[in-house]
Length: 131
Image (cartoon, rainbow, N blue to C red):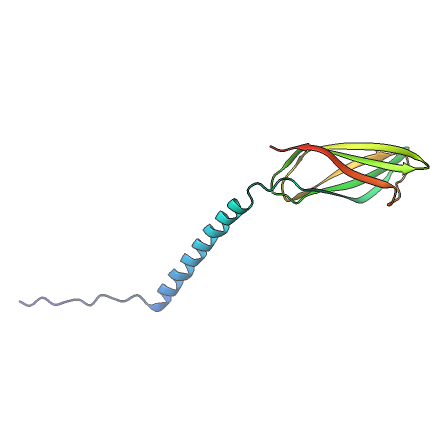
């Protein structure tokens, strides 16, 4: 008796196209994650300060400062210092943020006895640590 050969069913082209698209998505995702993990390593905190608002408080003025960390590593115990020049005297205020994650914004409030003018207020980060 002669053996009859069965013809194997062929996969439709749409299945091959779908499988190729899925593989491309998975490999692209893995590559994107690997690149992010390797390229971002060692990007120290880069802290930028800007005044974003303020309001009167009992007997003084609260100045709201945005602290933007454009680096990928967090900054811990960030000390922000504001110096107001008014009628020949320097008025200082400082605030401390416990944690500023990488690529994020945090806000701090500096208190002064008077409302600062934009050209009379100097802001700086006087220190931080990294994890």
